[in-house]
Amino acid sequence: MTVRHDDVSLRITHCGVCYADVIWTKNRHNDSVYPLVPGHEIAGVVTEVGSDVKGFKLGDHVAVGTYVNSCRDCDNCNSFLENHCSKFVFTFNGVDTDGTVTKGGYSSHIVVHERYCYKIPDGYPLEKAAPLVCAGITVYTPMMRHNMKQPGKSLGVVGLGGLGHMAVKFGKAFGLKVTVLSTSESKRDEAISLLGADNFVVSSDIRQMESLKNSLDFIVDTASGDHPFDPYLALLKVGGIMALVGFPGEIRVHPATLNLGARTLSGSVTGGTKDTQEMINFCTANKIYPDIELIKIDYINEALERLVNRDVRYRFVIDIESSLK
Image 1 (cartoon, rainbow, N blue to C red):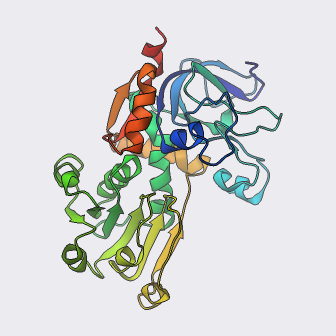
Image 2: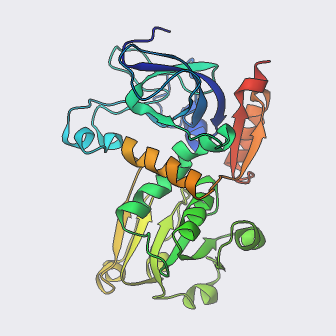
């Protein structure tokens, strides 16, 4: 691949496995372009830089996330909200400015413009860095935007998958009192013992939910399956904020649930380049690491099926480097 004056080429060592990989490999949005190469949680080592690249050098550890291009000139790009640019280009199955279809991280290497490449600080494991650039940034962005970084306040996390477990880790790092809300009682022990949550509630248990009413300052909802919203919103204090990062089939809310508590229901998707680098640096400084299951590429079909069945704690990461040996 040609490395232009502002590009960075990297040898991919690891790639996280996201539910997006399931969606597009199975053509669930009816827009998949085959042959398709999934993967947008990419970590690796710089092998070449363009003549004008100042921020990266050979041997640097870097990451590439969910997008590899944007217009770089609109209000959103100028505010480092490239993820909301109308010309945002997905890392895989996107159409780039030259008309080519982008290919993702289930690969040996990738070339990207330096703006969409992130420095992984020395000492942070590459296999753990990969999930940060999708799962990590997807929950970090709304937490920062809604000022959830307030020690002593209370956070509810709906769902305990790849995104949810990162929301718990960020919540604890911010000094919040964290309650995990899950449909599965089986996750109680790991939520509290492994991830350090302060409380665990089975969301289908009306009595447990009733005990939490009007008690939370914030909720991060990572669930993508269809679920009711009013029972969760009712847990918020007056003025509380619930940030939705999943994609359920629809959202139905009784107006009184929002109006009577002056509550906010907010949406968010991935994050801008500035926030992404800041989040990676925050994880390094605070020793926040995703919990992963490392696999080789020949296991990917089983991994994708296990992802559909929610049988992963909490993120599959493909060891690309050893898979190619």
